[in-house]
Image 1 (tube, rainbow, N blue to C red):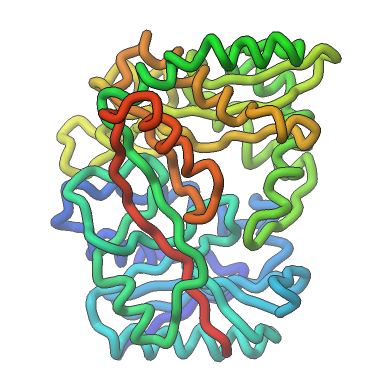
Image 2 (cartoon, rainbow, N blue to C red):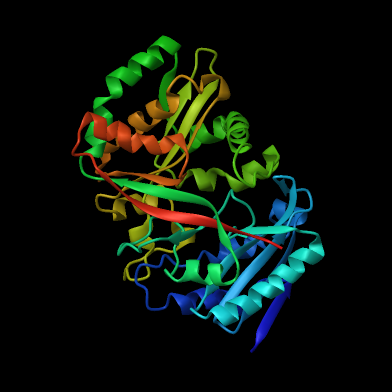
Length: 375
């Protein structure tokens, strides 16, 4: 068994990237890997890289994984480590052997429990798909993996810590949400709040306020890692903002000219990233201006909605969703997708909201999970 290992401050090798290419080589739906972004994550250019210890393991092109240890991070009072960038063939014995290397390393760092898959932090990619696999191209940013991954993790002694879901509406959803706009607009008028398009220019102009709301929201999320404003500017730069849809993304401004909430909305770039598309773009080529004209009736990805704490009891999250959906009808969108919602999160009720208005507005779901193991 040829096991390779890459220590902290050593760059990922080509072999590391070849694993994913090997696993998905016959899958036309795979969106590929953003190798440049991954190399950046494992480099000193990434501010968070200096706060963690990392280690990578693999075997030929059959399996890979990374370990992450932040000495300042505690979850439920426990010292923890994450594993991420996990890809593997369907070989439980190989998987158990490589996971044993990671778990030994995590114990040496001082961890008593591990979670994953998480690529560095929960700001980025984490979780795996579980349950029945749907025959479709994954949406942009969706966890995507062979169905046997849950079996591999279970064989290695891991159990589900938290479940998540995404919800796809049908052709009735956009009209249903749009029909609620007059009620939502009346609520905004009473609060003296105005809605505006969240363009890249507006994002940059209001970035510090967006950062403050973002941190206030995320501090209650699993695995929250506080980041300073400089790091936020790097992670959520203008280049990042140029991927969102400036026509359907929404920002709310109150009577004091302060941000009351925002919703970053994206077209689903999945179909033009898919490996089976002969005219595919690559991840580094994606921005709204270039990619949106190449899409036909895309789904609307409802990804990140944040409301200022002082307005959390005023239905602004629902209002943001309704405004985004109403605007999307003008731009050829097919249906909204509620992306990667925690299974017990109240925002999953948006689907029930739509069905109460029109029983034809049904939805389908895909499930995901985050796993854990006590060392």
